[in-house]
Length: 264
Image (cartoon, rainbow, N blue to C red; front, side, top):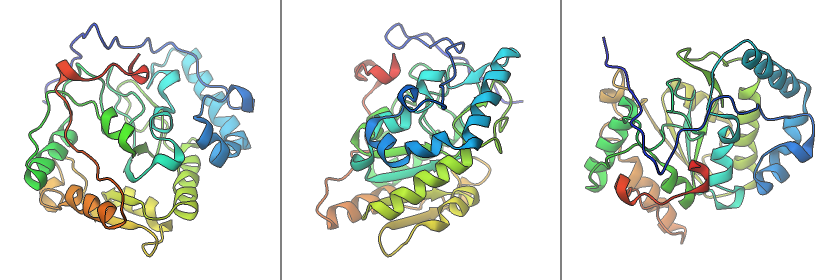
């Protein structure tokens, strides 16, 4: 049996209480979505299926379910990477479902939380591809601040219940996000790891964007081609060919990780 990942308290990055209120999606003025994203995709949150999702989340919370990430962090991927700032998009599937792990960015965990196995393999590939040593934490927020949109297909989950909120409405919203990016932006890099992400990315026009595909970094599949894929250097080459600054895939050590409002 795998060892349980237990958060290690870090006084600089306290773990939010999971009892934070669920975002209200019936009133545009109360939707806590970064302004540029609200301009491009905010109307989708007013659709009937999103109202049903909001009601489902409130009911589950009223029934005592612990929902992750905490309410204020559900849309953190958008807050960290505004619409026009996105340069690379990494698609995940479901938030982590352990206490203190999820904070709104796919594959990322809060500082002080053990690095999950898939992220361990991502770090291994970066080290092999770029010679960058793995950091001592799993917080990817510095990537997001550089323009890496770390987007899960489903934005909430329940404690110890992987996939608990699949099929409840989030997928339609995140499909719309991808379609809007693919249509209204040009020259993005999409990293599609695993069959789920690749199916979700079928709407992306590879003539307008760089689409890189590989197996999922999970220990179950990473050896089938994720390890050795070279996606991180390939993404930077594409950006530089288009005159854009590359992503610095290095992450500072935990002791030097900047304080950020999204980790408050």
